[in-house]
Image 1: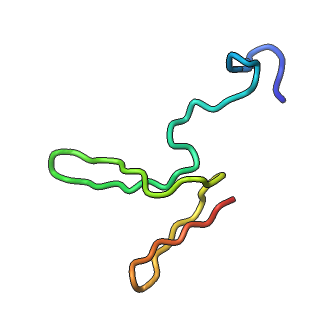
Image 2 (image 1 turned 135 degrees about the horizontal axis):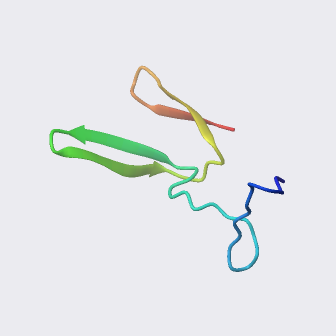
Image 3 (image 1 turned 90 degrees about the horizontal axis):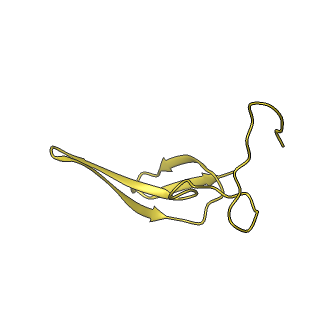
Length: 65
């Protein structure tokens, strides 16, 4: 744990550490169009998804750390 001058800790109401990152551990589908882009949740429950790959039939594979 980092502690000392220049470092701070952020804890929730119960005094526990927490993450404020939305969709953490999710795989998102991104669609780009002329009028912008959209993010759609595709899969969840990952600790830290790190690799993506597609097979010859277009199936998505995700590696998790």
